[in-house]
Image (cartoon, rainbow, N blue to C red; front, side, top):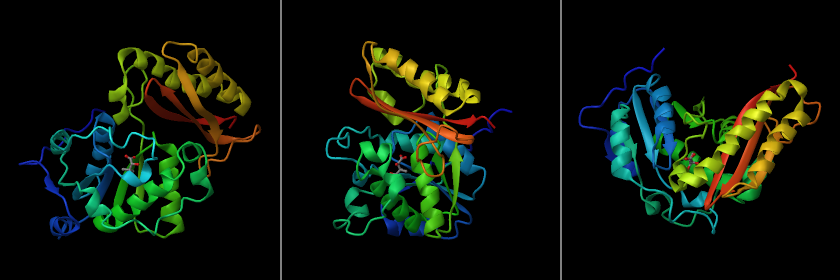
Length: 293
Ligand code: PAF
């Protein structure tokens, strides 16, 4: 089945910058969908928008580079920003409203009260990026409060993020349905990411070893957890000697609900997740595998 033709909205989406403008735009909005983003929109975001578009009357895309989820040495200042390009892409996907607040609008005072991500937020991405998930869950909660969506779509590429958002929604009884969208990949296997714009041609060749390692791990799934880890690690060991090298941050096989390490005798679904630096760029990717059903 081919993708349905996107509905280009006449005149493009309404771009709103403040909660008041957003409230006015969403009066009588019917069923509302939200795709939260940090902008620099690409094909992966399009697929999230298409999933939401099918299911709601009014589709909102938020574009906000959230400083609360960046560490002091991370790429907040150089994170790609292109609101005109993002708005055009949203228009092509039939988005009704783009909510693009300024930082001072979202955080008019120091954020004292935040959403603690708990133990799951300290593992993997959270161990490498302390405070990251508190920043994510805090801004997602604020966006849910401002937009009041019936459903919100998140990409499976950020597997730990969507697991934490689901857990937050369950633990805090938030009235929103969370929908996961499969990771979009280029034909060579590279997962779509706003940070891919940082990759030089040579970086990109090295970066392909992430998806190759995950594919090798997935192929070993019938042999169990140890075999999955070993097969993926072998690909990454080789990539550590490539030019430029793939500098591994973590490779982990985890329980999808808790992100705790999968035991050697783990059965059923597990997430094989990887994070690595290639040149100046930090990349993450993951695949869900089924261990000895
Ligand atoms: O996945 C992202 O782009 C961000 O973490 C999100 C969910 C928009 C929160 O800032």
